[in-house]
Image 1 (cartoon, rainbow, N blue to C red):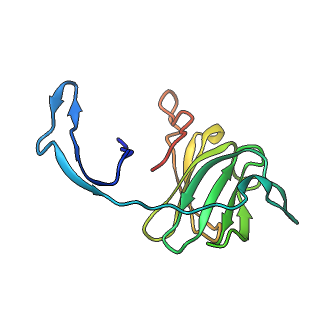
Image 2 (tube, one colour):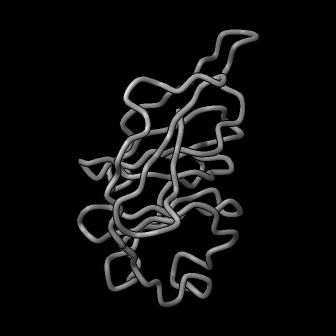
Amino acid sequence: SASFVANEVGEVKLSVTIKGQQIKGSPFNINVHAAYTAIKRPSKIVNGDGKMGQPWGIAFGRNGTWAVTDDTNNCVWIFDKDDRLLRKFGDGKLSRPLGIAFDDHNHLYVSDIENHRVQKFEDSGAYLLQFSNKKKGSRTNHPVGVT
């Protein structure tokens, strides 16, 4: 697994090498588009469900929703495009959620580091499945990031 963060907008060349060997087809021409979402008040979210503790990861869905993992409250907060809280989930099911990502179907992948797994949820918060390896000596060890 690898990730790439562009420092500029427009066409860029991405060269990929593994152990000193350039992979076939590299360098790649990539067209980078500017895209952002302004978040008005992520650190002061207070509502009937409580206050956000330690926001860690953030992800943006295709439908304008966005999600934040909360390391202190062991949950995920889901907001609409106008920064209104839609729901919160994960209480009692997550232990130190950090990384988060949406897929093309608006499913969420959350790294659940103290439970040594990555969990997949509907954007409603309904659990779908998990990725982990519980065999002795080879279990998933504190997964942090997902992309």
